[in-house]
Image 1 (spheres, rainbow, N blue to C red):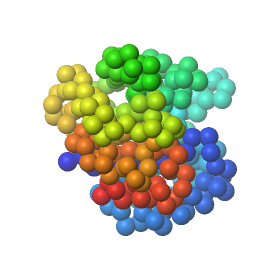
Image 2: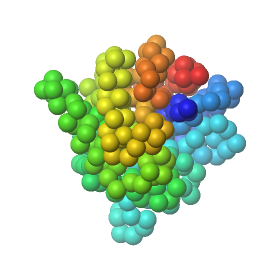
Image 3: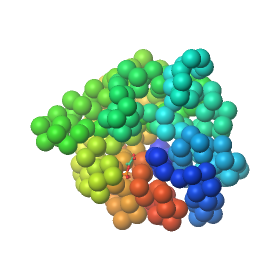
Image 4: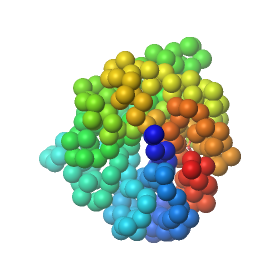
Length: 251
Ligand code: PEP
């Protein structure tokens, strides 16, 4: 009932020509993939060129961040209408690297989510605990805090246009993947939080991706879990072949 969703977060990688080459190769590899939503998130500078390559394909474009104001004196920021204008359908919001290095908070995440939704951009809302939280038994508290803060005041329809990405911080870029059981445990907690805040019907239709060292070798097992609806992929999305293999393991 929930269409699997696989997103590649390219982070701070690729010049425009490298991004175009990666997109062109990927497009050829996934052209027959139906029944799965495919997304790539290049840097801001490559969005326009990648958008051109993606026209008419089955791959959606995402940005890696957005600002909550539409325009004005906010040097260095990029707004939701600008991302729509360049062809984005999705935007990643609240990635742990933004929380860790750029002062992103639940409040700013929530403002960005609302700005994205008001311009018909679908937010991929990232949540996840640090290693010390997990070791201290605080995983549930952190996830509840990120979820309730990030989705505060969203309507049923707005939540249904959003995607949640569970990304344990200790698994991002470390090669340490959560076990399928660990991922499922937190995904089912997130679905329960959504059920409590909305309804069973809304929660059961909301997609929850797993992210954290997803590779072709572990993607199928993770996505076989009942509450894991896809993957947010960093490192392995920088190679067209490995990302395409992950996409295919969702079919
Ligand atoms: C990410 O950036 O969201 C991520 C999960 O990275 P990696 O796959 O490299 O761990």
